[in-house]
Image 1 (tube, rainbow, N blue to C red):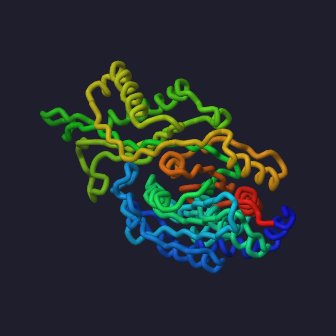
Image 2: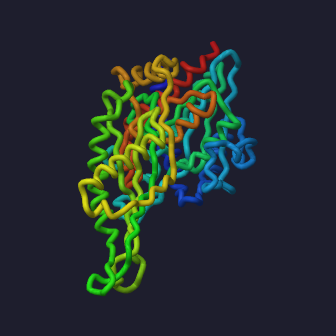
Image 3: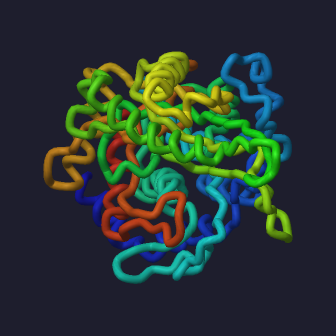
Length: 425
């Protein structure tokens, strides 16, 4: 059977990449708080319907309990951005499986691309396109699992569920939350870009805005201007020092022993009238920045904020500039890290499938990024494993996946579904 699966994938390469191209070519940028997933979702629903799946296209706001859920983010409504679920029913007696992907991509951005972002071009052993790595390739691989099973005449015992949710990027997660309040299974595989590594855990993170308020004015006027840009410059240095310090003090979970590191990323920085059409000849009244602070499973928002503020107070005692400022701390978004038990059977099944396809032992370790996985592990009865393509350039120009490894991922998904759900003899 493994040989049949391998031959099916090799004989259908053109179809596989044409299918992927058809989804990558659809613009589904997440322009938070709004999105543009609907056209892509309808395309996915059409593909799943053509493969004989039961189809449910639903507005997440229609799901009972969503708006009252503690993890619902009211700032990110998703009206007109439906989730899609396709179900290939099993014969009975097996375990159910969800392949869960998100349709939205990050914006294409202002930096130039050398390849068309929605072109799906193949060159240099790579497939190029916005969202190809994160995570339309994984979505299409899950859809192609259904086609392969159909073509090979394989009936699973358990139900195989393929879903595409909306608004995952930038910590949205409302689409995933709505899906988990409506559909669950014995296991979920989320094909985030893990580079064919089986990941039973993932990071969490905190997006926080820090604002320094000064006093605008000219340096030579009778009033004394208080420059917040000097403070924020010192704060950035301090933030980097804190990032290095926490790596020496935080307990690293066992699943991250070979992949440790929880980075701190500055992603916005502003001071003064940056949109003015003239030279703003004065000290600005305020300066602010946002930082994304990654965390391990088990860490809390209060832990992070408290540790950072304590480090800042210690820095104030040694820095005359910081001593003059008490910044405003505004948490914008918190995502939990999460993990499943190390002995969960889902890890074993997909590790064995990966080993069989790659011809070498699968790597199992924590994923070094935050995602919607915590909605599964902490707020639903469905445990979750991450497993996705190899590639590069996520959230940046010239995103791509490696062609040969993508074919291997399709094989892994087919074999993993068979081994988890069981095959009707």
